[in-house]
Amino acid sequence: MHAISTHELTKRFGDVTAVEGIDLAVERGEVFGFLGPNGAGKSTTIDTLLDFVRPTDGRAELFDLDAQADADRISRRIGVLPDDFSLYDRLSGRRHVEFAIETKRADDDPTEILDRVGIDPADADRPAGDYSKGMAQRLAMGMALVGDPDLLIMDEPSSGLDPHGIREMQELVRAEADNGTTVFFSSHILEHVEAVCDRVGVLHEGDLVAVDTIDGLQESLGGGATVRVDLDRPVADAVERLSGIDGVSEVVASGRSVQVTCHTARAKAVVVLELEGTGATVEDLAVETASLESLFTTLTETGGLDAGGRRSGSSPPTGTTDDTRRRVTEVRS
Ligand SMILES: Nc1ncnc2c1ncn2[C@@H]1O[C@H](COP(=O)(O)OP(=O)(O)OP(=O)(O)O)[C@@H](O)[C@H]1O
Image (cartoon, rainbow, N blue to C red; front, side):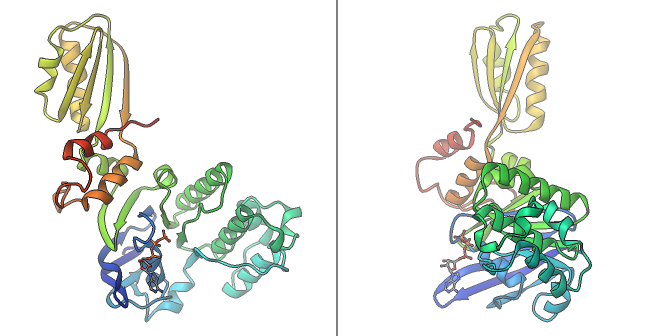
């Protein structure tokens, strides 16, 4: 049983197709990042899961229950952090959590929930209207955690948080996942997703253009990794030796250092073995992988991957394929 599955899910608003034939399957217990630039259709997809909007075509299921027909049963099993939540200015944070507990007929301890999301007791008793954006976001997250949901759905949960708050949010998400909760969250801020997600789905103009692990995406897109090997002495024929290895696209040798672009995990290992086979000793080794940021740019510029995991669509709109590859192999700063 999947936590979330959609089948040809489509939503049109008049002439605008917000979501086009999405087939998505989110496993139970995984942290799934739903990525895409502004206007890609993330919120619309989430709204159909929550039965806030009705699909034009196709359907969505949560725990094998129909998102429309079984909306009430589903709502008891999920916690939601909406994109545009609003708080009651005059009610305290604590009262908000108590209210969520009463509404869900749960038996959580409000103090424990507030503590989990980092709102201390003094702040908990202040009116929510006085909260900063980050505190309000934490409070809304706390309300979503009420009732120990099986599935947490969050629309841009990092919005408004400072770097410390973002780290706390990521820890909270991981802690929930470790307790067996499935977490599905949208973001257009890629580092937030990269840090916590088991898998990501990339949405572009209403199409789901890729679903994979971050490592899987890197491999499919050929982004690969740059391996830099420092040896105890130069290897004269390093370029010749290494260029022929399957999965290696570029070799640069300079003195005792060799830099190799590898597109598979195996290629990295073979490169090192080949160099050691010359009798040279490896003194240092560094591997830098393509950033999610550059993968994301590639995906949303080229129209995604085909069924075999290769980049699909026509040539990238800007630059050549080589330009794209160069972007993909940008290293993390
Ligand atoms: N109620 C609506 N009426 C008309 N068009 C809508 C409506 N809701 C969304 N859209 C359109 O559907 C498309 C997808 O919007 P959606 O809000 O789902 O994207 P998103 O990926 O969540 O974007 P963002 O990251 O900016 O929140 C956009 O073109 C948007 O203008």
